Structures are given as C-alpha cells and as structure tokens.
Length: 117
Image (tube, rainbow, N blue to C red):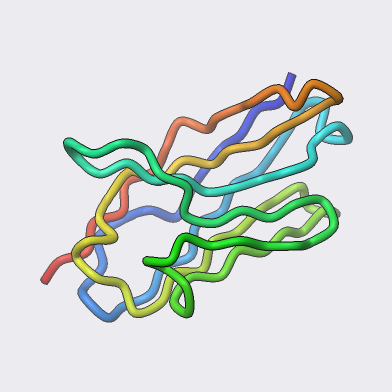
C-alpha cells in the first residue's frame, strides 16, 4: 500500500506562483510513475504533469513553460512548481502514483488551488 499526502494549495493572484508537495509513504520502493492531476468544477480530471522513476517528465500543453514537476526520491516527495498562474488553473490538484508490477494506482486527497483574477 502507498499513501499520498498533498500540501501547498491555497489562494493566489493571477501571475503568481505556488508549489505543491506530495509525500509518499508505505511501500514506496515500488513506486514508478508519479504525477499531478487536476479537476475543475464541472470538468473531468486531467493529467497536468508526470515524472517517471528515471526522471523523464511530461506536461499538459496548457501548462508547458509554466509548471515544473520534480521528484526527490530520498524524501519520497514529488513537487509541482506552478508559475504564471491563471484563473483557469483553479482546480483541486491530486497527487497520483503507480506502484508495483501491476502499476496499481494510488491517489492523494487533493489540495485546492484558487487563482483570483
């Protein structure tokens, strides 16, 4: 089992920055991919950024050049640095991890990010 705990959400003005953190606990040695998803009201959950165990990253087109995902394996933590925030970035942000041979999926509880215009 893997547990994920996000932090860092809150209210930020347009153009501002925010860093989200997600700490993994449990059977962390089996974690491969880690990512950040978000879900805005009335919309489907979407992948924002992902990073695999080797450090390769991928981003949604809407956040490329503004968001950066990173991973500290020693601290079992994945970060999402969000810059130049826009009102359309407002959403609940969820940490996600895939672990084990069968790539079992785990989710954090979510953290709200609200960007005011």
